[in-house]
Amino acid sequence: GAMAMGGMGGMDDDMFGGAAPAPPAAAPVETKKAFAPVLQVEDNGAVEKFAAEHREKLAARRAESNAEKMKQMDIAKAELEKFDAQRKLTMESTKKANASAEADFMALRDGALKAGMQGKDSWEKVTSYLDLTADPKRQNLVSRMKSVLIAVKSQPPATGKNFGVAA
Image (cartoon, rainbow, N blue to C red; front, side, top):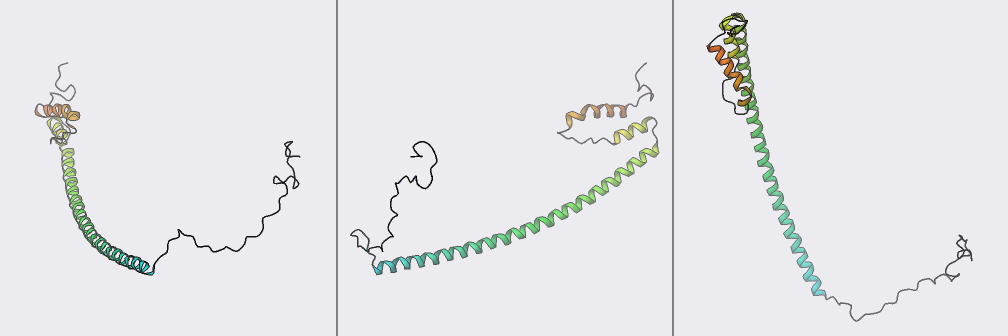
């Protein structure tokens, strides 16, 4: 028909050839099979007893675990509060130290500015800003600058114009 020729047919082109619909399902027939296991009542009791004991064990473990967890949470909370208090103290002391260092720096800077910019005072001012403590991370970067400034401080230039170099 139309399907064989590649066309799309309508209801008339039933591939099963118009077979009758299946009859309604009959009520299931109960048959006893030889290989079906037969459960005994006392086995069920043993399984239920085991299941109940197992649930009790799990509940006890869960309660113990929750108690341990709460204990650890309390310890952690106390440690966190202790850490926060220590951090706050450290921050306060750092703020005080920074404020003190800034006040000292401002006093030195103002004193150097009042002293003037002539001769030896100006080089002392410049070298006073140097941090002569050893810093291994920056040693290669600033060592030459420090050595030049220290040399100039110990032997100030003859004049401000040529820094002691003969013309």
